Image (cartoon, rainbow, N blue to C red):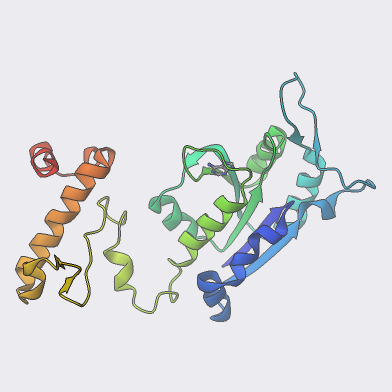
Length: 240
Ligand code: ADE
């Protein structure tokens, strides 16, 4: 997979060199290129923003550098262009799976009050665009969101995970949160590991883990339980 990131703070994307995306790069699964939007400006001040038409607080990112940047980075390919913005669709594991099936992603990281809407409309007229939000809060810019989305996507690439089974059981893969996990010692600061996990009865362990997942989800994320196939009375009972 190729990932291009366009930002006015390319140094923000340095973690893409580390850890997980770094491992994917070393394995040849990922080709990441980070670009400075200001490389596509033509004035002495390398201007990327201007005041909003219609008035209002803050500045808006100008369309011209974005247009040139996206033309150049897109050239010869059919990417999904991801605009990271608090006004986007919520980022979920489902979206991560969809993006992981792509060969080329371009992240356009907005700052200030956002990017001139015509950039997004133009990109959408010519190719595939997703506007994605990391969550219902406002960051200073889209860079952290681009990092988070890249990390969630890259770990789904075939061949990335040493043990692909670890992808199957985790939170959000099937709509439930993950069960609690424990390791040695069996008692730590007077807290004991649940007996069922010490007994070696795999059927009982499986049932206990499933119940823990439903309980956790019902307590912490009733919105997920409502969207899942569990009968209402099960989740209500377990949430008590
Ligand atoms: N830029 C600013 N806030 C954001 C958010 N919540 N998600 C994605 N991009 C953003």
